[in-house]
Image (cartoon, rainbow, N blue to C red; front, top):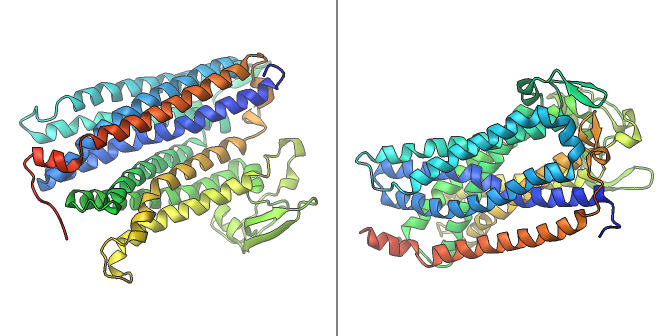
Length: 448
């Protein structure tokens, strides 16, 4: 372990931590909104099925929050241990959003605790639901603040660098850099899509197992329609992200599309392989699509990789990450569309098995899309950790102990993920929704 490159090991360990944390962080951002939608729907329609949805989702949410805290703390620890030069140079610029992210999480945690222990304690039922507002706002604000740190790494501003030291630092300007609007909005929308998709998959899986209670059908409708709305917003924001790249990070867009020569009416390349002369083979080319993505016009000029030094070009492998992310996003959008249009589809069954199987896949597909999105964002920024100012190799630790840290953290994440799945499974198996409905006096509800 000690003989391996500390830079490479640091990248692997940080990447692994982000790989695990991003899923729990996304659930932490999106599920509070889904809980709020369910409780609001229950109060508005006086339907206890939706209220029970909110109760059960809230129980599971607490478990994922606990794991997210551990993985989030690991990221903070690794920033200091693995990337000391980056923190030494950029620490003052990102200190404010890091502090605000912690503060937002405290707000979320405090009100989540109050929310969980005050069911049926208020005469006015809406009072309890209002406690979810700071929970949802706190979780989203936490995501916003931490995402501004990543945005700053992509588009640094708000400081003057003199002899490797940041001077005249303006933290607000650093946070409100050009990358912030698209990155923040994309993180929020994708988190909401993931959470709705996971919850929709749980409802669809219950129906596949023959649990024909109306409770699961109401859950399926609420979550799948929500997933559709959030997926549409994610796709629209993705288009804005393409225009951001064309303007501010043209080398990343060019690498993602294997676009080597600057031109107008540039085609979008999907799939394919590169030969030794960087000629694209076996790809699907969509005429003018890259120019339209970059500037909404077929005659938009798109910069090619030829304009950038070879040592500052992102890895060309990000092309496959980009293609897979887009493909997964389209599938995520189409599944809830088919659910909405199911009455007009061939067949008599209101919930065809193939459609339920597709909805079960919504959560895993959304996870894949989020992982691919972050991999594309981070790998596509290479070789920079602070774009234009500091390379990854300059920021990493020189310690020979990173290898053992990697082994320990792999064990930690395996234990955390296994424990989370195990606890959630036991939590809901030991207290099924039908039994809770009976205890609440809601008998029946079977729809044939």
